[in-house]
Image (cartoon, rainbow, N blue to C red; front, side, top):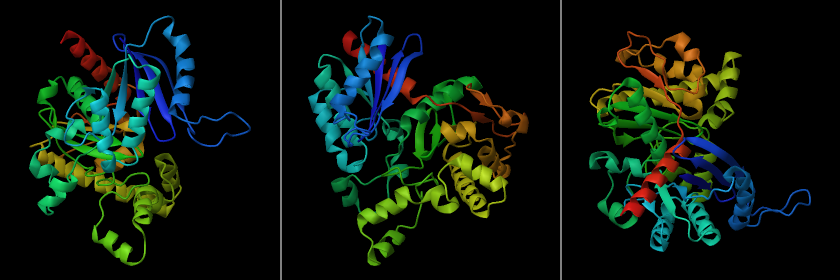
Length: 384
């Protein structure tokens, strides 16, 4: 089955065509600056429908006479309704749209992508795969905020969690590497990129995760603050900052960028090695915060059988992995420096043989997970 995976942003459209059975990526790319003025006298890309024409052109050579069988969409927020991937129809599209207030930067763009595909290829099955779905197994004591009930019942204010597609995929790959069934896997997954989250996995299911109502909660990230005293927001409002200014401050001007002067981990590591105190401070704060979550989630899963690094920083930053693991000595965790230094696209163990908990690096592949989920939903619909 050929599945086109779409990740639609407000001004961009990432795509990947996959042969699910073979596990191959046939073509991939990104169309950017959608809706922006043309540059250098070019025609510009006025909307997502026009962007899809460029995608169509890029796909023709790779298709070699074959047809696309389905389209899988990454949808950031599924709210409480969507606990698994679903076949999209008009009602599902409207339901996703009603969740826009919960993810105003993401869901509207996801809906635009869905409608653009429906306009261009109306007969093509589309499937929505939700970032929040994997975390729908969290127990109430993990997803509840200690606030009046009407905030939840009227406004849906609760902890949802994100990066679920990646966490679920990586948990499965980690279980396979350790030789245990996915349903028996207990561990802590660390998805570390510009956005970062930790998830406690017990019996193969998410039981807690660091991101909450929005992707701002939790770890120190590239430009996001992570956990912060909520009274600071009240204080800033009383000092005259608007909600939009506070949102911009915490989501785009904080995190590693605020602490160390850059949101890029490689830049910070290089600067810290040269003796830059601000860069070292950023690494210290971020690794300390992450180690605290690992300790907490070790408790949440009843004793982790693995700690797993994934995503851009988790897969590639040997220095940051070392900083985090060095803080976990109380758990009996010990890093194998030689194994940690290896760069490989394959899942691997980077802890010493005598480490009380294995430490793994498992590359994520959200597009593959979306494609496989899409194929499974479409096959079930045909069979049913």
